[in-house]
Image 1 (tube, helix red, strand yellow):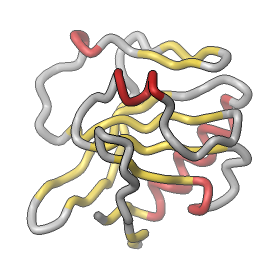
Image 2 (cartoon, one colour; image 1 turned 135 degrees about the vertical axis):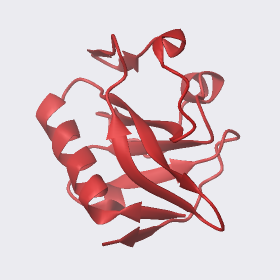
Image 3 (spheres, rainbow, N blue to C red; image 1 turned 90 degrees about the vertical axis):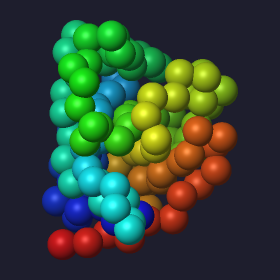
Amino acid sequence: MKVKNELIEGILAYSRHVHPKEVVLLLRGKVGDDVEVDGVVVPPLAVHGQRFSLFQPHMIPFDLSILGVVHSHPSGMLKPSVYDLNHFYGRIMMIAAYPYHSVKDIAIFDRRGGMIPFEVVP
């Protein structure tokens, strides 16, 4: 899996800006020989709250480029909660954990909660 560096930096900056609230964004990209994540979309009617974030999946237009969701964990926990896994959307889930300083504060998971290794690309 490949993730654009510019995207990582943007997610970390957005998470810092909204902290201490959680953020939620949709991940956009391409699936081929490898998965490449290259953008985000703000979901319609997204809610950023204390210890939660949510969006209405039925409000998302049909779009095959949406690969999953990224959300922040202001607690600093870099693993999905049971709630996260029970509300999984798409093929991958990215989590940005406080303090949102570097790629070390980012992890990607499959729907079972298994960590997916990724490479940061220009």
